Structures are given as C-alpha cells and as structure tokens.
Length: 112
Image (cartoon, rainbow, N blue to C red):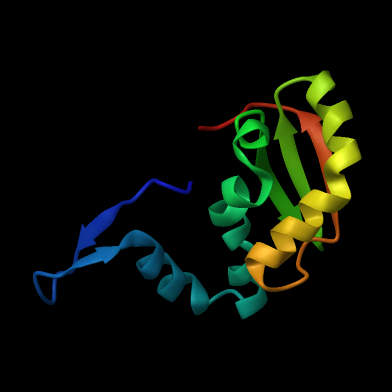
C-alpha cells in the first residue's frame, strides 16, 4: 500500500484529507488502538524487508502476533525462513513496537 495515495474532499471545507485519516477515525470507534497500530504493517512492509523481498512477498493477514505472508514461490518461502528473525526485527523497528512475534509463509497471490 505504500506509495498509493487516495485523497478525499472533505465536505466541511475544500481541504483534501488522506483516506487513511478518515478510516483511522472511523475504525477507532470500533477497534482498540493496538489493532490500529498493527495495520501499519502494510505501510512499512517495503521499507522493512527491502525491494527484492517486497516484490515476492506481501503481508496477507495478522492475528495474535502472527503475520501471514503470501509468497510467490516455494523457493522464496525457503529463503525467507532463513530471514524470518531479521524480518521480524526490522518490522518491529519500523513499527516502534514489538507487534510481530512470528511469520508464516504460504504461496499466494502477491498484490502490487
């Protein structure tokens, strides 16, 4: 999701508002703050893992500290298993919080 920007015109004035600000405000009423923080994984993914990995692996889901990642091939899964601890450390550093405890890799669709 990083790099994609969607702005929405605010009806109260002519100022453009980033859609993530609208979603954060709306979801904040229904989700705990910790849940909102974990959605940042998608925003920091590319910077945390680097371009080669980001082109072949994307976060798919996150639950109870476990990040589920879709990967383009079994060869990439094999390689990423060796890098898992480093990826977790980099993600948590980017997030400024120890949210990611583990990563599970599976072959799946890579969303651009």
